[in-house]
Image (cartoon, rainbow, N blue to C red; front, side, top):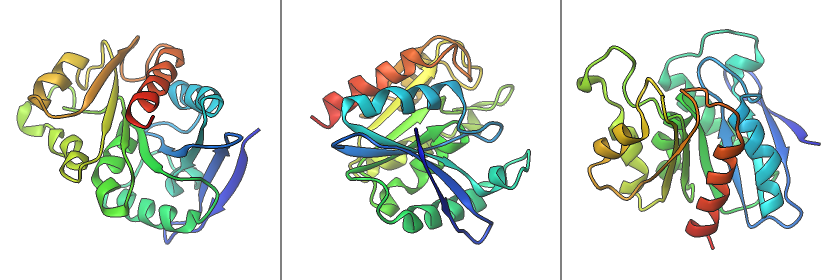
Length: 208
């Protein structure tokens, strides 16, 4: 059973669901995308599986989602809320603290991990290029940002993700030190088991 904590922000309260490991080696702070919540199959599977492997998982409902809005605000507001959430969390999660999330949440994690002292980034369904847009709309710069601070980054991408398939991500990285794994499905994945297994493998190799 998750422990639910409310964290105040200037945009309204965020809600953090903490799935604690008995003796955590560290913690994952993950948030959802622009069109969903923390019940997404990949986030739910990670929260169910990863604590059994020694890492606590805290799933963050962003303030716009808690308020019942259907559309996420623009990136500057998402970033502002994340900064307040990380500071306001205080002690409910153990360190080292990794940032992450799915889609828009992965982008937030990438942009702020270095600034806020995260130990690494987990990017689920990273939205490399919006469907129908050209390479000039690529967000690869965001995915590379944590590496500029020396942080490990792990991507789990759906094999048929219209925002960028695993090989598209690898090609855009051009050899950068980011691990890319794949899981069945599109941007939403088909089940979360393969995603959770990939995360467990990455934690074991990157943070032995």
